[in-house]
Amino acid sequence: MVVARVLVFALLVAACAVQTGPDFDRRLGEMGGGDERALLAAMGCIPDNSYQLDDETRILQWRWDTSYIAGGWAPAYRRVGGLWVPMGGFPPTLVRQGCIVEWTLSRGRTQSYRWQGSGCSAALLHGAP
Image (cartoon, one colour):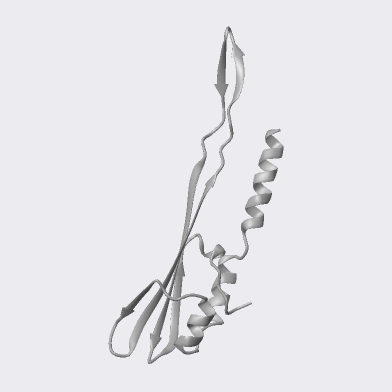
């Protein structure tokens, strides 16, 4: 029973892993060199933040927050003496995975990007395959 649960959990985790860090980085790199309109189309949504560094340079920032509850396992009960005693099990856990992507634009053209976070594999990018 426990082995089956572990196997199902492992399969669910593997199914959720859509892309790896290098895949995400490659997809972002394919968006470089264009203008701001092309970047917005490729990212698929408007940025969450924008910072004006000087007259010619801006930083656009996107954020994703993927949160879910990983179900726990109910304890097994065993009879000890005249009492039923719980053994093992663990409660549900809140899992938060965030991702931040920042693009630097100079004179309206993309110059560089950076990203960070454990939730970037789940971030949806529209412009690259």
